[in-house]
Length: 255
Ligand SMILES: NC(=O)c1ccc[n+]([C@@H]2O[C@H](COP(=O)([O-])OP(=O)(O)OC[C@H]3O[C@@H](n4cnc5c(N)ncnc54)[C@H](OP(=O)(O)O)[C@@H]3O)[C@@H](O)[C@H]2O)c1
Image (cartoon, rainbow, N blue to C red; front, side, top):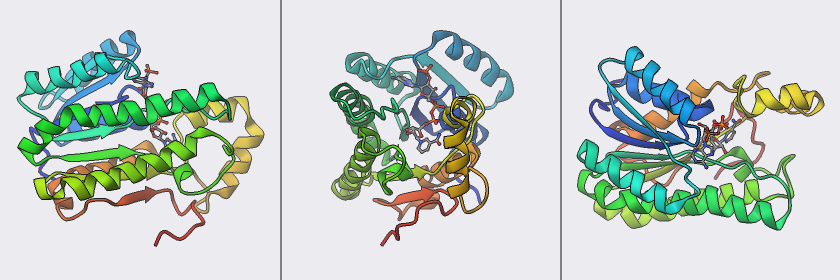
């Protein structure tokens, strides 16, 4: 399937590890220009260097930006649009993974997972309206099913992300902008969250693995494939959906 993402300008938060890193590569493979960020300057420098060699026909432009600083986030998004002449796709990927039922965690989860996501999209919106672009937000199966993280802000805020994305889809449809969510299941990356759980809490890892009906966790590329489809013109009549990519982990029926 030809996705038609060549030369499209993509803004992606959290692109140096895990699912974000796979999405950056997948967009570059399609010939997109990808602006991505993370907090760690050394990782950004390394990614910029290796991606430039790996994908000479595309453009990867990483920047060290902590999205919890909304002023810096907004000026980064705006500068990407100026540098690349617009924005076609926004992928809001970062989470701060706050899973304690404390005021501090509720505040941080709202600030990073919801408010910074809102702010990323809000700043990109005038550019997306010009290009009739598309928005993909990253939620989680924890936004759909109550799981081992309950009670905590993680799933509740992820559910809010799905709801807000559906609001965007409905209100932006007349302007030609689409908005969808992708909700990953358990995605195993050695230097990622499930790699950490495997090393630090093998009991939880074993328990969670046993809940995966395919007998395995997902790969970050499996999320990237779904996100690329949602972002592309191939999904031109898909807006407001929550694309759950979880190997049938969720037990609730999505009606
Ligand atoms: N992995 C899973 O099993 C899973 C399952 C369901 C949903 N998800 C969702 O998928 C998304 C990505 O998760 P992941 O597992 O790929 O995470 P990850 O491996 O921890 O990678 C997160 C990326 O975001 C960057 N980042 C974190 N906080 C940031 C901030 N404040 N500002 C800028 N960049 C920041 C990280 O780099 P720095 O640390 O250097 O900033 C890194 O590049 C999240 O929304 C998560 O909720 C993941």
